[in-house]
Length: 261
Ligand SMILES: C[S@@+](CC[C@H](N)C(=O)[O-])C[C@H]1O[C@@H](n2cnc3c(N)ncnc32)[C@H](O)[C@@H]1O
Image (cartoon, protein in one colour):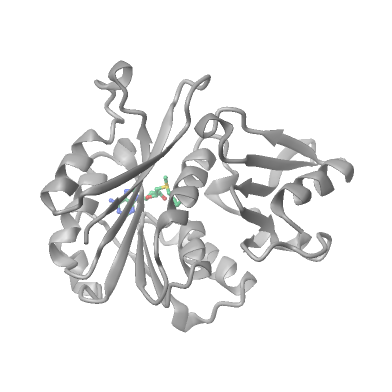
């Protein structure tokens, strides 16, 4: 079953299905599936491109789930939050262009680890999630268990990305991909994420998220990715591909992939 059929499945079963109309000019399907619980709506499934993010309790109700499926324990994920969800979805989609196979991936500001799971599904041998709050440790572990990933596949580090000693805890020579869905929402942590590259000689992919479109109209936006892209060029990254929300929404969210050869 393909992910768009999963959408039909939920529609027929009476769930509230919301197609997100302005996601990269609708070139990328982005669908949120909600169900009512205690008179409030709770997201239980999201389709992002070819990928399906599904509440693990519903896994058996969807027959023939697509290969690219990430199960989320009770969907307790930032992907299910109204404001943060689309940032995570854009970054997950940007990761489709990244070769994670056989690599160690670091997920900076990992939250519940939803992007670490995408990296593992894309063949990463090991993921390291870094988050400032310890509450995410158990959420990440729950999601890993839901997808049958054993403890050797992942590591959770509670730490501050801006702390220069953070590298003491990292296998700096092994890390091949940095994922940082941070943006400037948390001060200069996104800048600190790029500075970490000074210590990661094997890293050739950087996935950034949490930004806003840097077209002329938004050039002065404090959420523009221009500053970090400039820093990445100085680090030898030459290829950038953007995934963006195009119009109709005030946020114009943006994620990107940078690559060095
Ligand atoms: C936008 S959320 C992204 C979460 C997850 N990666 C996702 O895509 O759904 C960013 C996370 O980074 C964490 N964060 C912000 N500043 C940080 C810092 N200096 N060190 C570690 N984590 C930080 C926040 O607490 C938050 O959970």
